[in-house]
Length: 581
Image (cartoon, rainbow, N blue to C red; front, side, top):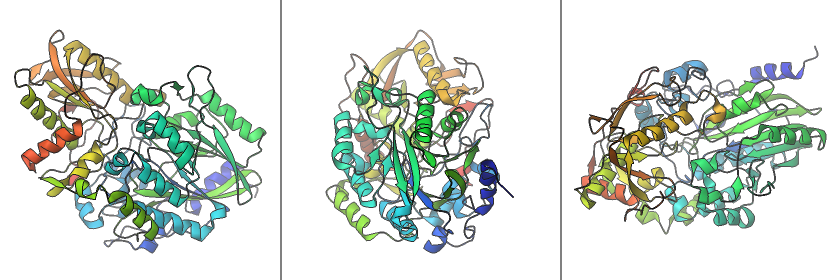
C-alpha cells in the first residue's frame, strides 16, 4: 500500500513516538537504572538531540511542574495549559512513576524524596554523549532553545561563561536566545562572536533603522546525506519582557510572513529534505503559528517550559518541548527519505541526577567554574519549614517570602512611610527548596538571578495600579496565543483580589483590597518594584533584591511562609494542594 506523507506521520506514532511507547515502562516502585532511562531503539537516518531553558543550572536542582496553568476557555485543556491530574490523565501517566515526578506536580514533595534532584551538566553530558556514541556524530544535530547561560548563581558570577564553556564541551550546533541577551548587548555579541562554538540563528531580530537582520535567519546543514534547513526564532517580545537597554537598536517580532518566506526559500532554492524551526516562542504561540505557516516539519519549542510527552501535531508539523532546568534531554530519531519525513521516534529522557553517571570532563568543568564561588554560594542562611516553589500562574511561596523581605527592609529604612504593595515579576524559572531543608545563598541567587536586581519605591494612585495589573492579566490570559508573552501574573504582596479569567480586557481583576481595605482609585500607595527598567526620576534602594532577601532569611533563620494564595479565581479551578498529595 502506498502511504501519503500524512499517513506516514500517523503510522509513525505506532513506532514508539512517545515517551511511554519507546522502551521499558518506568512506572515501578524502584528507581530505574541508567540503562532503563536511556532505553530507546534507534530509528531512521537522522537524530536531533535537544535541550531548552536550562537557565544556567550546571548542578542538579528540584524543579516542580506548576500546580496551575490557568487559561481562558478557548485554550483550556490544550497543550501548554495542562497540569497535575489532568495532564497525567491525558498522557496515561501512572501515579508514583518517573513520568509523574518529572512531568506533573502531583505528589512532588513525596516523590522528590524518592527520586532526588534532576538535571546537572555532567549528567546531561553523559546522556548526550551516549546518544552520539550510539548513533555516530555524523548522524546527529545538537540544538538548544535558549535561556541558557543566564538566571542562576553561577551564571551571574561568571557572566554566563561557565555555561558557554559547557555548551562548547558538548559540541552544540545551533542555539537561539531570550534571557541570554541580559548579560548585556556587548557581552552577548562577544559571546556569540568569540566564545560560543554553536551558531546563533534568528530570523526575527533586525536592525531598528534599516531592517537588516542581525543574525543569519537559518542555516543549511547536510547530515548523514540529508539536507536539513534549520530556522531560528528568538523570543519575539524580548524588548517588552526585559529592559530595552539590552536590545537597543534591535527590533523583534513574530513575523509569520517572513518565516513563511524563509521556509519557501529553503524548500525551493536550497532544496532541503527537512525544515526544523528552533523556537523560543513558547508552545502555545508555536501551535498557533504552525496553523498559519506551512512547510515546517518539526518545531523544537522553548520559552514556556512545557513538557510534551508526545509531539503536538498541527497539520503535518510536529512540535516538541523539552521542559526546563535540565530536567530532560530530548531525542528525535527521524527517517528522512526522498525529500520527505517518513517517520520518527521520540523520547524525553528524564535526567535523574542520582541515577545517571557524571561525565568526567563535564564534572571537572563545573568544579573549575564553581571553585572561586563555592564557599559563598554554599553558605547556609536559614532553614525553611515551608516548601519554597516559584512556578505558578498566580502565586508562589518564594514570591511571598520575597514580598515579606521587601516589606521588612523598607520598614527598617523608613518606618514612617511604610510599604503598601510589593510586586514580583511572574518569571517561570527558579528551582524549589524542599520543606525542612537549609536555604543557601545559591538558592536565593537561583530564583533572583537577574542582571538588573535594583529595587525601586514609587508612589502610585490606586487606579493606575489597577490599569497596570489588568495589562499583565491581558498578556497572561489573552485568548489569542499570538498576543501572550509567556510569563505568569505578577505576584502582588500586600494585596488580595479576585480574578475572572474570561472577562473582557480591563475587567478581569475585581474586589481589590490593599492591606485589608478596598482599593481607593485616587489614593496614592507606596509600591516596591524590581525586575524591570528603572522608573524615570526614581533612585534605587541601597540594597538590591538578592541582598534584601538574604538578609531577611538570616534574620528570621526559620522560615515559615503562607501557602494560601492571595487570589480567588472566579471562573476556573485553582489547585493549591498538588505538591502535597
